Length: 80
Length: 227
Image: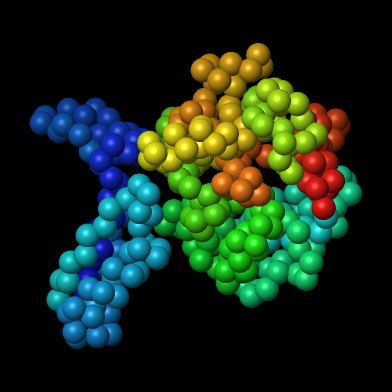
């Protein structure tokens, strides 16, 4: 089973890297970009075929290591 | 005072901080991240600066889950002293020894320069050799030193007088010089029991007049005497 974990900064947490990327995109003259927040994506292969076990495992992985819950949120998707 | 200085893969300030401690009269034993136990009789655990695990994922995140850190958490829970400097501060936050997190500098640049700090309280094992409100000059060298925490934590740190050092200018004004965007100009904080100190600046660099000053000595002299 494959899963994708997306870790993003919580609202209100300053994201200087996102701001720099936003500035770079705007400097190309790309119209219509309001703001950019950057985050991380983890593609994870899991041995189990049991979806609820996989989700429980990934929740543990996120809360133990992949996300720092002080400043980040995470989202888990089973992608196949 | 027996200090265990821990080396992770990517730590690079372990030698300097061990030297600063020995100069102040402390006994130093080197520990390895993969060990499960601290040396017998450890009074102080030191998490030195560097780039443990290449700063992969988040600074300090992987080091905070290394074998030795269970022993460090147990040591802190017993009331033992812990000092985390720079990457060591990041590791201490990730390990749950201190609240908050160190984020990318607000200006995005790695900042490496001399920096004034204002000393907070001087009744702790780390600061007895300073005077309250003293302005010291040490150096900073970090890309992720921007201290972030929630409002409640910030209020508690202030109310409980747990801000150990703040960034300031030569006159002690904290509104003028904030190298990384840290909340409340925080350069270092204490745990609730005042026995864990995390700080971004490097006092271990400033213990010899030959290399720029001795304002860091007070911290190590305080610790050596705390034994």
